[in-house]
Length: 128
Image 1 (tube, rainbow, N blue to C red):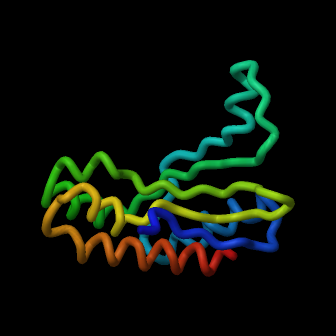
Image 2: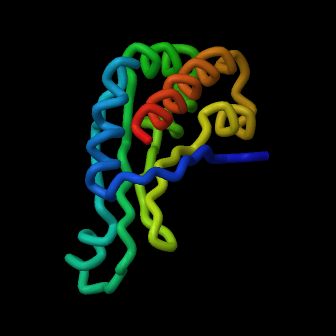
């Protein structure tokens, strides 16, 4: 079971983050929160030399639908995406909503999870 989807990009780290943000909008998603772990850990006095940024993204209409169907699905919201560097390459990825819903055992959200996942994969693919 693949829990995440990711693609390698030739873009630089910040360029990849900017591309993801831009590519989400046509699918009705926006970035609610962004955290750069390298910077955050440094603020706490810890060394972490890898570029790793998490983006919490949301499509409000889809989120409303999910929460109205089963409030406990809110544990998976907002959707998480990441941009990180590894071995001189930059990757853009996300947790797969379909896998999260499947593992949770929540019934009746498969179609919405499929739609959200397809949109996020399309956004990542466009950003790459």
